[in-house]
Amino acid sequence: MATVTQSNVVISGLARKLILDGLLDEPTAVDSINAVQKNKHNLVSYLVENNLVDSKSIANSASGEFGVPLFDVDAIDFEQIATSLVSEALIKKHHAIPLFKRGKRLYVGLSDPTNLSALDEFKFHSGLTTEAVLLEESKLTSLIDKILEEKESEEMGNFDDDDFDDMNLETIDEEANNEDDAAGADEAPIVRFVNKILLDAIKKGASDLHFEPYEKRYRVRLRIDGILSEVASPPINLATRISARLKVMSKLDISEKRVPQDGRIKLKISKNKSIDFRVSTLPTLFGEKIVMRILDSAAAQLGIDVLGYEPEQKELFMDAIQKPQGMVLVTGPTGSGKTVSLYTAVNIINTVETNISTAEDPVEINLEGVNQVNVNPKQGLTFAGALRSFLRQDPDVVLVGEIRDLETAEIAIKAAQTGHLVLSTLHTNSAPETITRMVNMGVPAFNIATSVNLVIAQRLARRLCEVCKSVVKLPESVYLEAGFKQDEIGSFTCYEPVGCDKCTNGYKGRVGVYQVMKFSKEIGQILMEGGNALDIATQAEKEGVNDLHRSALMKVMQGVTSLEEVNRVTQH
Image (cartoon, rainbow, N blue to C red; front, side, top):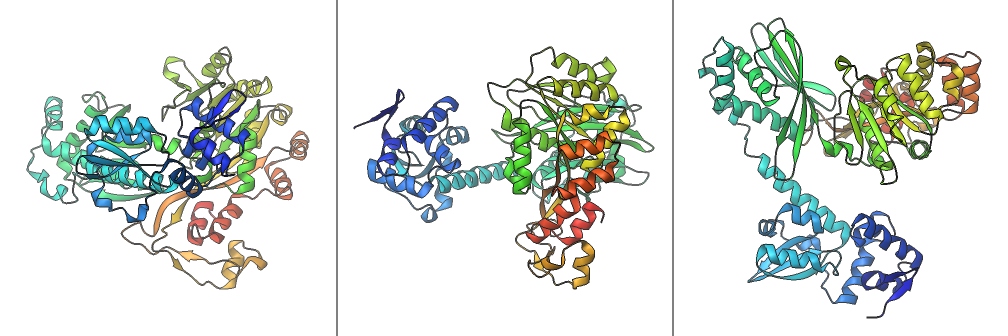
């Protein structure tokens, strides 16, 4: 087969065919091959993900060039897919899937027919002769995601909704002393109950679990899409045993009930997936309240496009984190998604050429290739102390979990002014208030003006369920009172929540609402002249910066959320 050579890179096989068909130019092919070899990616996946060639065109070219039949995914019998013949790890590794078995021949669906190693490994693990079947890349990706999600659901589905009723928890006698607490925690009904609650929380996409003892009842609540709801109420006489079980799992001292404790649980829910829980205990009047934060690493791998930034906001965000120095601040209350925003930024700029260090309290999710430090004030390791150490470690990017005091703020600003990109958070209500908050801490205005590049205020609004959301007609006065402009009324469809078996009270998932304020020369001048947050907000509005409420109204116009949810989140 003839090859094309450019810049010492041999272009052959599928890439050569795409060039000959006019779907790819040589320089782009060379860059793609280099990127694929460097990051060990699949060429077809790379081309499609980066919108260089569409998956249908690639499939048609590959089918004609290599004589591999192009298969219609829609014609595949989902129930007959032979995933039991190979492991999930093998499917993920080769981005290929065993479609069906005919006699001693296994037909393997893939998007790149030159991926002979996939066929060889599938042959080795299945003991069958393998034959390639071509699928469009985008459809193959969707099929693999669906298959893996189904397999994971099956593994998690061992706990039925009726399990709780069958446990007969009332029959377990309560013991008063600590030793019996430990023994009780190992009893099968308690173990099954706790496991079911944890798995249910993961299935429902909860962010937090609350185990709460009161005088006459015990309550378990989940926070789903930012709202708490009660899911179980076991007998109060089991309170100590449930807490003991959770403390054993968290490797905490079960005999210590007078002081708060912090721990972690790593729960393996399938062969290839585990979920971390951050556990906090608190002595209350009637026993220990235990709150667990679910730390799903998948959240940290979210791309910028799914977080909810408007195009102009995304452009400002991307521009700020690509700068070699300066400060990017994210602000908002607890639970507003600040950590996900910062982790997303870190993932974007996390390359071999970049040294990234983070100081967090605590580290929530482990990030490959990032030096993460747990702040521990009791042992003398504060944010300021960690930040000082970072600056002696040749950093390019520094993430400070929170700027809480003047000392941390001063060191962070010094780092931003001396050739480092600094990412951090504060607790304020809006982007302009973040600037004045730093002034109130004691940071000189000129230091802020010369170091801060971007300030992002954010909230999380619940997404309307796409299955059951319903059109709602409201009077014009309601739209005007909500903050819509006169010319906007009637130009969009407003929806309200309904509720179905696919969602929670009409909502499923959340979307970010942002105020993204670039620190302009004019805002810097206002700050230097002693202006307050209102003055800065007025100037930001002149520069086209949407406040949180306006950004939330845009989500209503896009049909993403409801006017009711906007008023709740932005307190309009």
